[in-house]
Amino acid sequence: MNVRFRCVLCTVESDSHLWNLVYLQKLLEEHGASVHNLGTCTPVENVATAIREDRPDLLVVSSVNGHGFHGAQVLLTHLKESGLEVACAIGGKLTTAVSDDDRVRSELLELGFTDVFLGDDAIDRFQDFLKFGLAQGFSAWRADPALITPWDQDAATREVF
Image (cartoon, rainbow, N blue to C red; front, side, top):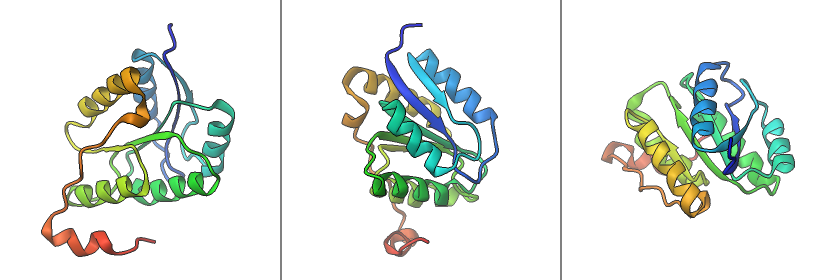
């Protein structure tokens, strides 16, 4: 296989689902990635160590248990506090309510994720992201702005713990 980029793949600490990681690993490999799959319930320090040691071009975080939003915040905050910078994509089912997707996407983009892939077209958009990243670099990607519904305006300005 001709390796075109290096990728660390993980999930958040609370997510024990494996099928999504296997699927994404195969998808990433089809796009030319050498993938270091950290497995399920990934401790944030393990992700930080892999980024330090592997120096990947991309970190991909997947969560399908509906509780990934909080874990994603914890993970990216830890990476920032550790002085680690890497293009970082996240997707899956990050909350238990689809109606929260726009607000969650907005908050994660603001936190520093390169893009957040949610909804029915997530895989198609993620593949576009991969193609762009291969051509121009993942950090050069500019995510479409997240839409905030009027009823989420106040929630988007509140601090989440």
